[in-house]
Image (cartoon, rainbow, N blue to C red; front, side, top):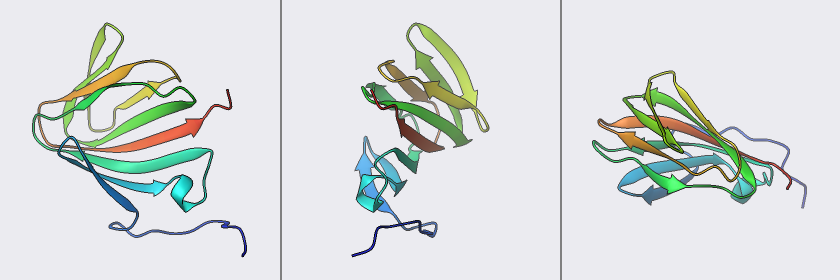
Length: 113
């Protein structure tokens, strides 16, 4: 069996998960051969957000493709909208509040610690 070198996925392809009433498509991750990064999209319905969480061995980026809300890092509550990015270094607890339907791109990279 040869190792996976790369691949192309269409808009509706990837691992599909439902979390907090939102739809997640994971395009890159361990199930597809990447142990060092993950990438996907998350659609959040009206009024739903991303709960407080942190990753102990990965940095995370959320890029807002549609919608608006707030990124909360520690005690800072910062408005985000289409084109905004939220970056959370490993072990930093963060969350996202959404006041409207939102589509975001999620990326995670292993830090090696």
